[in-house]
Image 1 (spheres, rainbow, N blue to C red):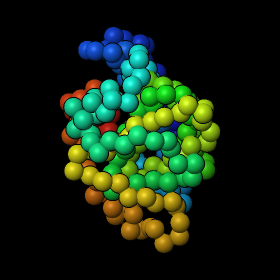
Image 2: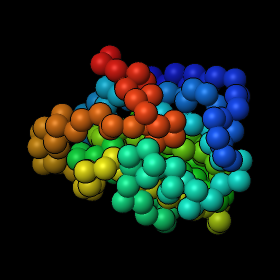
Image 3: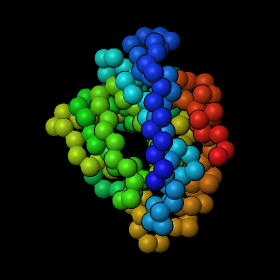
Image 4: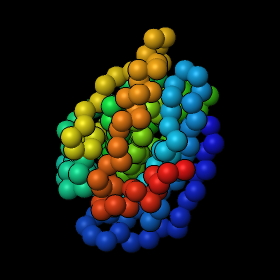
Length: 185
């Protein structure tokens, strides 16, 4: 449940409508016995888009190697994916998201923010504004499963998580930027 919420000063983004922080906040969640969580930190990029728009997030994610975008909300039950990492771009409203399971951390995400959730990390909606909307995507070549921390999921899901490789690109910054953030710890 170590949450290092490191914040960097705001900097100008390289192009377009982007204006968020140069470096993401990081939150690390160890295995809690119910949820495997991950040795890789959750990444929260604040204020990625000055004018949040679902299509703009979808285009950014697709350009950076994350596809199968969907638009909806966030489940209000703890769940995780053992076969894919996930990125969420908040394009309207706000949500309090609980990360890491019942003993994890709640964070508030607002329109313009992006959260990158490693395979295995539990997440859920702990409350949201009526206008909350999110777009989600997964690294190209992967697709998510749904796991809920129920007896019998593990150790099978642990093996699945171990097989999920690092994505080819950072969903926000592109290129191999995510590799330096998710280097072996």
